[in-house]
Image (tube, rainbow, N blue to C red; front, side, top):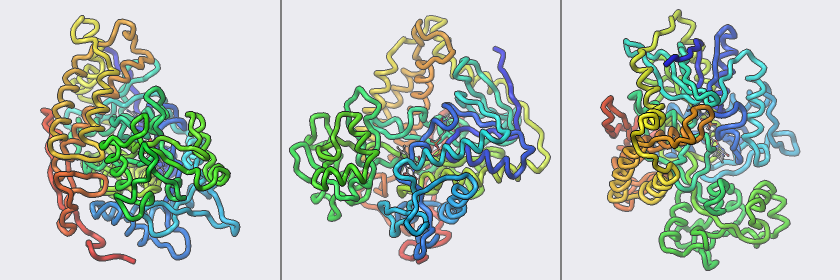
Length: 578
Ligand SMILES: Cc1cc2nc3c(=O)[nH]c(=O)nc-3n(C[C@H](O)[C@H](O)[C@H](O)COP(=O)(O)OP(=O)(O)OC[C@H]3O[C@@H](n4cnc5c(N)ncnc54)[C@H](O)[C@@H]3O)c2cc1C
């Protein structure tokens, strides 16, 4: 097969906050660089940064400080974050928010005195979340995209990265991808590559991230033998909309502010239940509220569709309509009256704290490969504070851009790909076509495989875990992998151009691989911290001897998980910087 080739200095995978900031900073550091952004969707229209509702955490106001933001991040992360990364996040956010406003032209909400308005978010000791109503992400991504369009930066839209390709000596030569529109492979040879495909826990029955996210980047990193840390840490948001199985609106986040403003959670019979789980009632943290709802669901005290009610009417319908316009309209689209009635909700998988291990300058252990945003691990530890996600992607995206420009100041030639590795990657991706052509494999139903993945991860590797369930999940994932590998495309889907069925198969393959890592890391962590709760090991364990999980896949596919001691480089448990 002929494989088209493109050569560039900098290749960026993903066009969220991380990818776009990296492109801008690399270009501004050295405008002579040839920079290419490859993105699975359309630039400016895909990924989760665009979906950010609540806002951006940054210590701006008098009385707040970087130290305070840092301590909230460390304590929220249950002492598992890499403290140097967390410090870079909190200090870098101050610079990045000014850049967003003053250089990129973002408009954020302001107080009457002209200062930037900052709202309260759960788990923080200060009101520090900068926002633009509840559409903060659209403001950020739109302004970023304009700046990228303005510059001489190449865009490969609807290009799906498949694998990192090494040279014969094992160094990184580039990335092979599929042009979704033509279905043809393309090898992009690059001197530096940034992984910024944004994780995304879409292997759970209920989830919030955008449909283009299927953990492809993490699966690529796994196949490349890179270490992934904290993969057991999957954050569930307690109130995802439950609008029935027929609509993708199911799982969509109904923002935390609803509970913060005094919203009530009720079981199927209309009785409030949070007082049985936490003295803060509905204002308890995301993990506690999610577990409480899950317990009600397991006890069968649910609504018609198997969730619980969120009720706001007692706060006055006009008041709710005024305060939560976007949420009220979103619910109305799905037939719910949030202002005067009740809405069915369910916990929903929201964010992966885990990802590729990296350094403060965004380098990884593989020379020439950097990572930023939700694909990276170590910034948030066991839990991410709401508002720290978009700060993470934009702060580290910018740093990655600068690092790549700096690295490329050293003369460095392009590396030739190992053609065997390149062809093996394409053969893996094309397998369902080959099985079709040979009449081999099984036609199967991707929808039923997806349903099994959803059920497995939701029931056995979700909000509440134990060794038996995790063991069951691992076996189910192994069986799913075998069936996926034997999947043959149906006759009607034999054209690779814009072949949604094929991409569904590729998505599922990435998700199953990464799910297996989540399950193994969850089995290895025999305590309960933040987002990870084991009924068979309910204690948090000793904070002073905290360790994080490091998962790595060997060339033969064997997965190992090690416990690595956390280095308390800035503050120890029991101490504080404020
Ligand atoms: C509904 C919702 C609300 C949120 N609200 C907040 C909030 O209020 N505050 C906050 O801090 N965080 C919030 N988050 C989290 C936040 O969106 C993420 O932390 C952050 O935006 C991730 O940025 P990123 O650049 O890493 O990834 P993304 O913005 O998700 O971008 C990933 C990019 O990678 C591309 N991609 C994926 N796979 C491939 C592939 N194989 N090849 C090429 N490209 C690929 C995608 O198309 C996309 O362009 C929210 C998330 C969701 C889902």
